[in-house]
Amino acid sequence: MCLSTKSYLFTIFIALLTVFLPIQSSAQSTLKCGECHKTEKNQWLLSRHGNTQNDVAGELAEEWAGQPPDSVILGQDAEDCVACHGATSIAANGGMTESQAMGYFFSTTNGVYTDSTRALHTDEWPSNACVTCHDVPIDHPASTPTLAIFHSPTARYAPVANASTLCGQCHGTLRYAGTDHRRFNAWQISKHGHGGQDDVAGEIAEEFAGSTPEEVIGDEDCIACHAPTSVLLNGGITEAKALDLLFSTENGVFTENTASKNTDKWPDVACNSCHNQHYPEQVSYFNSKTKSYEVLHSSQELCGRCHGNLRFPGTDHLSYNIAQGTGGIGIKDEQTMPGIKCVDCHMHISDVEDTKASMFGGHLWSTFIKEEDGTESASCTSCHSSMDAKAAHVVIRGWQSEYSNYDSMANAKIAAADSALTGSNDSTKIHLLQDAQFNLALAEGDESAGVHNHKYTIALLKNAIEKATSIITGVDTDVPPVAKRFVLYQNYPNPFNPTTTITYQIPENCRVTLKVYNLLGEEVAELVNEYEEAGGHGVRFDTNDLPAGVYLYKLRAGDYSTAKNMLLLK
Image (tube, rainbow, N blue to C red; front, side, top):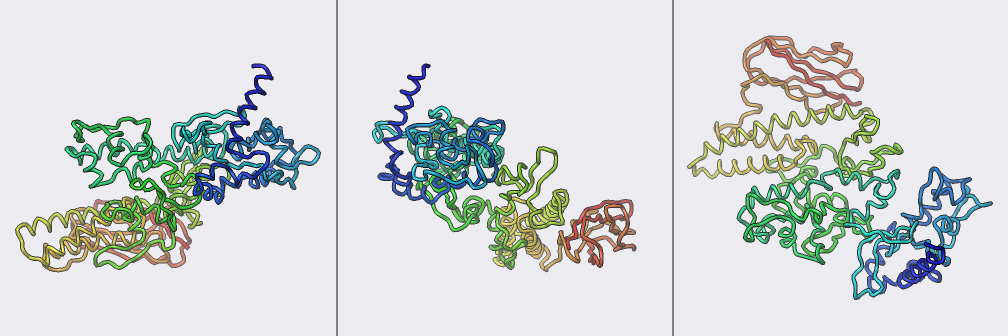
């Protein structure tokens, strides 16, 4: 293509942008888009998307002092600031290259940036303007804009499949493989970003065979939490229509063979499920019923919409409720980690530069992240400085082991109590069983096996066991019940300081020793060394002057031997 043709096409492009952007004479805050889309414009003005120039100036002053504009865009360590922070800035000043835009909008001294570099021509800087993400046809509003990313090196639009893919252009590696902004990449490998459609299909096939999409939505609104933005497909549809579009039916009803369909349209829990794209910093929940955003007071409220009962009171996903430590029958409210929010553990961002724990920006939602060098990052260490990821795993496995033991007991006891009450009219015991079943369901609704609020979850399970036991025996009975096998339980509390309790059960009379060792294998305490009767036993361990760290406690009972780890914090 000859130079004159390129110039002509660029002129046409500038003319098109000018329909929407008063590029040369006005600040971008007066975008003509705002005349019809006033709410979106006002939100955009308050967001980081609407104020990007000073951020770029600060980065240039800090990291590019001594370098000319060309090196930022084209050099060996190039970092194309224009492409993501102000793509349409190339249309300013009659049309420029990206390098020229960098020289025009940011001050240089003798042709290079300095530690005093600042923003210039701020009235012409577009930030991330409407037309950065929307390809607006020239006959709009007769024709509808499409989602597309404006590519500043070529001055062309590149269409995108959906809102998350659009975000991933700058908040992921879709355009620049070497970027350290990788929230989209983390989202893709998280439960929010993959596998959701098949999970829903399996649940529909298992639980809703014979039901219409409308009946499913009326009973259990899968769309609202698993893919809320799917209601924006095909120009806007109902939640029931979204189910019909995305899952197979026969004669208008779901069957045991229901499977995913139109998988290319399934959005998962998309970026714009939790971020209003025009004001992403504001905590917002996209309500698929109303097709509008609800502004929330905190991130806790956002998590609690789907991982708690804030949106659907009858849900069995109750992590939020467990973390709050409320709702149990006959159990006092309690929090294991008061003041800690969901995002503190599940969206921890490391301050170690260029680690996945830093680049992912919390969007993997995992408390543990495998780094490229084989090490592991753990959000626990941000509060517990004496721990590392290995120690955190020990604590969590311990909590989950204890939860598993009590959960098994509770299920067995409640099943026995339910059987014992078959045909009974004893309203007192029937209500007692209902309370036990409620507390068990609440504990299991946590879905973390006791990690989110360990003390409270164990209290719920113990209460359920006690109530069920009293139905069977007629009297209150301490737990655990009479031993039928050798078991060494996880110490509680764990981590601990300065004391903890170790419990175990033995099914026969035998010689028992219980000793504590440090990681060097040195014995630091002998807690039990005697002949004991069959049953449950417990002993308190006072750490005295032991240093913080991981310790091993080992049980020998007859020919049986086992050990567990515990963590002492100081």
